[in-house]
Amino acid sequence: MAERAYQGEMDPELAALLGTAGADNGPPPDFSDIFGGDNNSKSKEDQGVDLTVDGFPQITKRLEDNPQDFLNDPNYYKTALSNEGDIAQRVHSILQKYLTTKDPKDRSVFRQQFIPPYWDYLFNVARKASGNLPAPKKYLLRYAILHPTFLSADSRALFSRIILENSYKQPVYYLDEWLKAVGTSAIRPSTTDEVKVAKNNVQSKLQQLLEKSQGKLDGARVMLRQKDKERIEIENFIHNRMDAIFEHTPLREYSEVSDCLSERQKSAINEIQNLLKNLLKNDHDVEVSIKDYISAEADVQVLSDKVDAEGGAIEVDVGAIDAEFDTVRKMAKMTCGRQGNHFPILTGEYFHCGPNDIATRENVITILAKIESVDSEVFCRVYRNKLNRIVPFVLLLPTYGDTGFCWEPFDRFNRATSRGRIVVPMYPKNLYLAVLYAVADLRWQVAKEKASFYWMEEGLTGHYYQWFQSQKLKGDIKEFFIQDYILWMTKEAEGIQKLDKDVRGTFWRYMPFTKEVKDKLKTRNLVYQELYQRDVNRALSDGY
Image 1 (cartoon, rainbow, N blue to C red):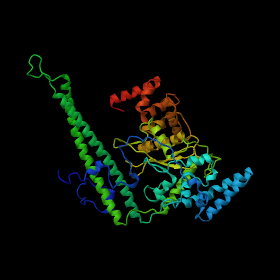
Image 2: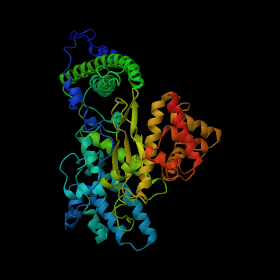
Image 3: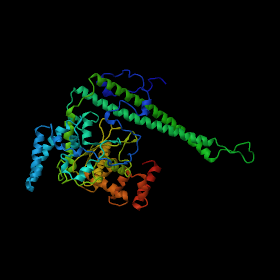
Image 4: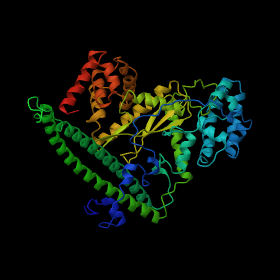
């Protein structure tokens, strides 16, 4: 086959911008990188998204055996406030009044007065997060510990044993890690549109097109891998059927002659004929997938060269962290809610969590694994009829909030492999429920974005919306969905019927339990047995 046989057409928008329509895109790439998993053109944010991983690692240790000594530093508080200007002095002054007053009313006033300047002070600390922060400032961002003596000795001992490094390589970030990743462009800022860039609009457009092309390239890679795996499976089936056909037994009456084909062998021949047709169809699909991959690879290469020629990628300096921190401050308020505790530092007065109640990285990964063991497709997205498991970014915020949430279901430029983003408060009353809130929100937003303009008619959101309307309910439909999802995961998964019949049917089909949970439930009650039988009927009719 000729070298350029699979060359695809460049994206029209890209070609119009670059003026390269009809240009020679060069020779095809080396296809070893498609299956090797090492491709330098992937965006920084998507590095580490391994679509072959089907579960979370088992957490073998949640706390360090040997405690850290950063909370024993006698200069902790001084170092935390140093070199932060007048705002640090104001924080110290109000904090002193808050701690020394004995009048409850004055204490309440100083408590409220403390919050705004503290966030301004923390803003100054956050701007330096991309560099090497002193330990007190780092753990101030991470845990909201302004002064170690605000906590009891037992609490200090607990925090000193929290594992600092991300040894499991999961996309779960503490606040200081997140701000550093944003400041160094390892992760796209949440408020991209608000970040002031140093280049002109043409380069901004180029960068957006590059990210869009990288998303297409990731999708093409996924499809090509899927089709190659499908081809191997078909060939193995053919090989097995052929082996069965060539097995013959001699005639009892005339041992020098083999018997005729058995019914099983005749059936295998018919199967082989169908398998050969499937193999030809698969070969055509592989050809199309290779064409798509080369086209996307060419687009990425052209755009990368163009961006480099313009002086490199858009650099978002401190402005990226500034905008991100402003978003984080809003997120902190959202985790607490209007009636929650918005006090921004950790004190023994409000901190009452045990080792398994804090949203440490290890605890959150354990809970995410537990959720996935019940809701089998909770972190999956469909791209070109392929179900890809993509764990979202998880930002752990040091707040007293009780509800997590999703603020981005996926990157708008890369729907194929980009991660969503969820927030989890570190000191909730019930950590499992806080994570469930975030996961439920992610579930809703991904389904809604997938259905697009038809979200009120199709899929999970469409069926739920129609039920919502039929019940003449008022209020935020997403909040109703989140509460029902929590019941689905905490009650219905245990065989306790709490949901409306129609909602249960919708969830059973569009948010299926794992096979293990379904097998357990079908023996519990006729309601679940009927739902299980519907699965069987849909599978038989190929209409699932």
